[in-house]
Length: 297
Length: 308
Image 1: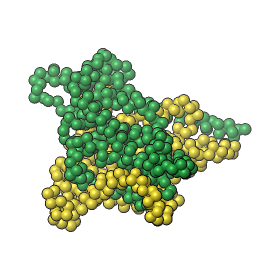
Image 2: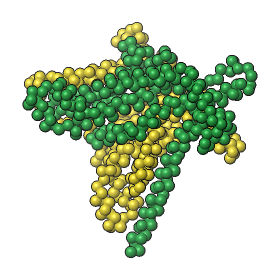
Image 3: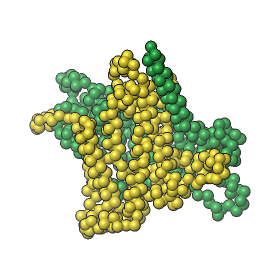
Image 4: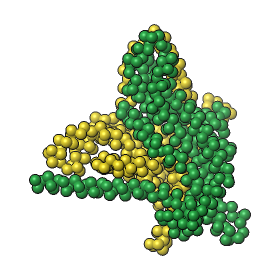
């Protein structure tokens, strides 16, 4: 009796600590995000004086107004949407059509193909040879540089192959083939409609990657009109250099610097909201994707 | 584990019968040849003085000169040290954290709180690196950042975090914890979900506490997953995230923030030293590859789990 009671206290203590620790951790994660939202609609003076902690003070939408007046963010949005959409189509098409034969037991040479693909996970040409290749293909400063060089990842191929192996019964193919179905027809009419879950997972990976990445754009694009959102943001958030020569009056300089801070907060919100809003809905697909991938490495 | 496929007998009939499968895989195959294997061939330029107009075959060979130059350059040891420090500290601190969080989350009995916490801690994964670093800049700004307001209130001073070399690594790692922990738990949560509940029931009957059960049931159950993740992480130790490092670099913290990848980018693309930069990148890749093979072999000796 005494024994179990003692154990219960131990467990309760464990529960208490877990709850406290995890809730604290969740708050630490949430607070910076919340603070950005609050700061983006507050008076920049109060923010920079350290008066804004929980609730917006001196409500203003000036930051958002400035952002939408300047069309570089909107242009960045447009470009990112194009890169994400086109990238998702190309990536998904190549991954699914490449992974399907690898999932077939009767596909001669799949060890060869798999070895060719997997080797690239551990060794690659590196930055400069890849850059020179893209350059020599004439893709610099074009949409293609953003969507083709990274189109297929071995990891996604493995995930997709595993999905086919575990979700589509061999009997289905046998039945279809007895009815005179060819591989192509079977792939398009039967496999693709059954692959909606994996297609959405792959498309999400690509879209999130395109939405958040800036490295490819940094090396392959020099035309600012083609910059994706993240490169535009980088200029606003990190490289922002006040043009001191243009401002003489000290007061206006200070005021401009404060508005610049306000613009930063608003820019963070404007660029992150789309993903953060849809993310609770897509979370389960992500988890599914990671899980399909991890079960059968 | 990566090659679970069985051998199929070679026959022309089999290949002809499945010719459409070869057509299906062809675009992906060509993609790998063009975008992965041609750059591997391009690595040859590390051993020559590459002249774009003469191509890889036509450029003069210089053997290992670029490597020797790199080893003898004044910042060679700094680059190695910065790269290794950043990734080793990052690994030691950020690797166990998702495991601990997953083990704790797994024990929560209130499903609603559990789901909410999960949703919240995954969220930063969807914040881009640019925004993450941008957030650090606004929060840590010496003049208007909230963190410095707190520090000022306590000590009367402010810290210019992005100019202080000693703050670069802590900031890098703390921000990784903030951003990556939640997503890192996904895989461990999945592994924990497959633990047989009967084991727990039996242990409870024997009077085992939760903590005890975590150590004797949960942890051993997810150990293979932990080991695989660890091998992959160690095999990537020389690949610290270029994206974040590059954004966090300022002229004042360059002493600790210049890593091999940022150096390759600057020497190669900004200064157009194609051959030299490729040599540095190749050196980095080779070290990584050796590490991966070594760790895998070591782990294979100690435990049953390994990559291949």
